[in-house]
Image: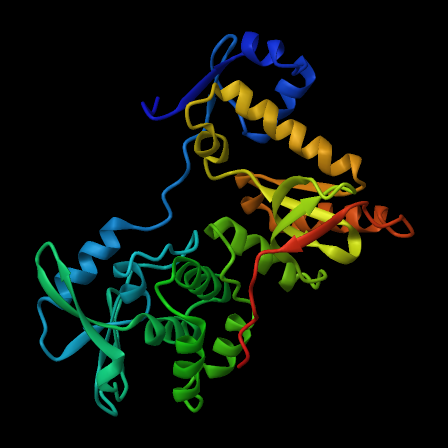
Length: 326
């Protein structure tokens, strides 16, 4: 068992108001994993970025003077998380010339005229490496990578401040005649710098691709007395639906110095407060990533159940964000 895992006992859960039925539900959803009778484990978050891919990319970069790290290789070296399932078999480089690119099983050499302000140098454990700037990297990824990968990388870059929205828009304009620019426009229009994790990006992409109403990210909810109730990962306003992704070590991160069962109980109270105001709450687990279709079906059923229902009481406000104007 992972030494970093958090443990909680059945006795402590029962003492904090959980029923055996609720414990069984959390076990079924993967929020708890059995260790020994009466002792459960809260799963440790999965690793999204491949350190091996970063190492391979840097090794190749140090073996050439004519190329710079770009596309997914540059994104990984910049420390951006790659969506689950991203193909990292090929190290990607760009040579600043008009032709002569090639694609092999483990190497993809792109060709493009790179401006001076589109290339920089980063320090690494094995020496300096030339790499495309964050803004150039995001547009390159959006042009050539699958939609989910492009949105995940750009969400993380904007959320962390690695790239500013205006810089991304400006570099997008520079490549308006490059192959794949239509795919890049589609991806970047879904980007939201408020997203706090790759799974949140995944949920928004899945819902958008299924034709569900757009989600508002990171929404603060207040009751009728203007008291803060909590913040949700996402919201579909017209349906009065909040969604929460719980699969990335959420309870461990919330714990701090508190007992884990207390953290779980506080989270349960927060959800109850949402529902008392009239919100539907869709909780999404990491297991849902294995079956996006089922997740969409759950969301559709919940949306249908709200037809004709009154709006939730109180009010809400999203964290500030302006969609990219491309």
